[in-house]
Image (cartoon, rainbow, N blue to C red):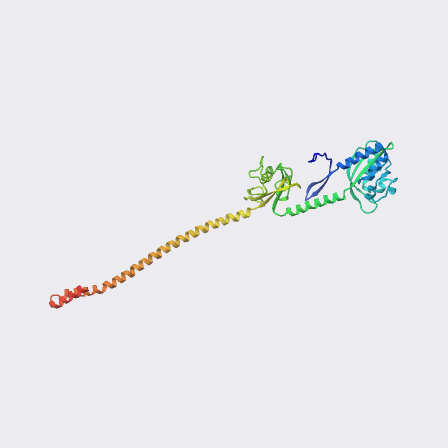
Amino acid sequence: MTAKNGEVKCLRISANRFINAGETVDLAVIHDVTEENKIQNELRRGLHESEEKFQGISNSIKETIIVVDEEAKVTYWNPAAEKTFGFSESEAVGRKLRELVIPPHGQKKHEALLKELKQNQLSKRHFGFNALKKEGPTFPMDLTITSVKLKDKNCLLSIVRDITEWKAIEEALRRERDMLEDITKNIGAGLVIIDKNYRVLWANNFLKRLDSDIKNKTCYSTFNTLDMVCPGCGPKKIFEGQPFDSREYFNKTLSDKDLPCWFELIATPIKDANGKVIAALELTVDITERKRLQHKLSEYSQKLEELVQKRTEQLKKTQAELVKSERLAAIGELAGMVGHDLRNPLTGIKNSAYFMKKKGAKSLKAKRMKCLKQSTNA
């Protein structure tokens, strides 16, 4: 492949497959083997030109170089091989390779390669292999082999690289993945990683209920059975440069029950080392219960407003009746006062009139005048 600066690079992908939570997972580590290919070409040129030049090149590089003949005997063992396997050159040269570094489980494959070498059928091969050391356990190595002519004899040239550190990185990545799976398995929320083509790169179990084979399918076809990007799509906004997006979303298919199901979708960007957005992480949180409580709260608020309005009307009515009662009481009090002020003189008039009616003819004129005068004064 061509790098950003225009340099052509040769890459090698080491892939492992394992089962995680019932799912087959491929874990790949990419190695830059551009320098290794250059070394192989230099070694081949050195072999063609002279054995001394070959030794000069192989002695100066860090890669482990081993050459064996058709009988599987070591004919060359560079300083890097001494460091890698623990055997000195004098201990290794002349001995069969399987006696030094090949474990029992690799003997059969080693014999098959030697057979191809003798039949001039051995082409360049590359594979992973667990090798022995002089002391200590086996270790993982990255092995590239090819056939070369050395003194008119077919020989097997092996370039070995200790990949213990790579394997440790792979194991760390696997553990991190397992940890992520364990953490997201029972959180009651959905997590999905979506690339710029809107394809699902990874999803947790919460979302795999929709489709156990969700990986590499488009998110809009899986979650909404659409043939185009969803309206208001959060990842789309992220890919367009928005740093964050949150929206509410209704989807009945994600519900365990035949009930309305509401979710809050929160989308954030995933960036590479250069800060470029390469994917979007979307969190799906079930907010159905929150929506239900909000609806109930709204109902309670409406009922409370109605109750307050009813009580207000009742209070207004009671207040009006109270004002009316107070007015009537004031009128009654006024009437009593007026009645009291009028009753006394009217009583005198009444009595005088009664007296005049009954005894007016017999009474003396002076007495009648006195009664009339009293009535007038009253």
